[in-house]
Image (cartoon, rainbow, N blue to C red; front, side):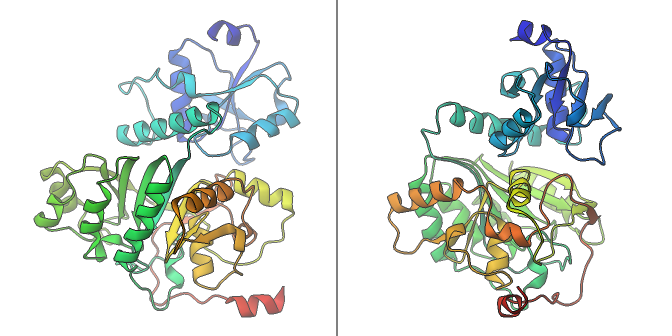
Length: 399
């Protein structure tokens, strides 16, 4: 493969994010020269990333070799896009990812985050190459609560719109999640999320019971650094697959991050801290004037297009679809989710397959999109009251 690449005059990496920079590091360690990054975001074209120029896809010579450096569920879309521009000499990056040296790698991700991203990518790539013989789910957001200890006006999960947020019925949520886990072959990442999931007192028993299942790689608890579980609760999270994902919004909001880290370290529970200063601007709910082709592009490049969401007894294709519909901010789309009550394991498995076959969801028509082209806003700006929005009845009147 190395000789095959060197036979071509120029080599390019398609994708400039943190994962793209990890791939660049690995490709260089394999002894392969890379000439430039390709990026679809016009804002990045002309910049330098990792010491390499970023160019537009239209500038690439037809006989160039392209290595796809994407950790998103958009392979088929990127393949078809390259073919559209006459670039047929391309391959995915999975075979290079073993060439990593954490001592020399410079990227804005922790070692644990990089290892998790690579593991997920390789699992997905392996399943695709096997003809998707197994039903492998990349991630499932398990919504434990709509309540939060912060009141962020730009929350991508739309918590800022809930006037009367409520906790999930954990007994029913457990039943639904266990049905799902019995129905699929593997889940790369179970994400216990809110709101702030640690507000729910029974979450620890739920986590402990979920740990009995062996067909998930990680159980990630997303928290904002405002709550510290007691020692008794910490002892219930002994499964080494459990990881805390801590969003640190600064000392004025995430006031207990240091204490939480100390508590997690005491009980040898894994954690990753992300110091978050900006978010993607993807928290509005309003109809967008897009063609079907544009919605396909929005979906293909979305960072959560394979983040299924379990909310109040239904499994949705993504968190925006779940919460926007739950808020009655968008019309119900029958094919974009399914009810779990009274379903067999076989029916649940088929439900997943149907969602996975989608090229975009109806909810995409109301979403800004969640890719690298979306503008950013300051993270965790607080609001005193729930934000106003148009409900479906009013929307239908204007559409």
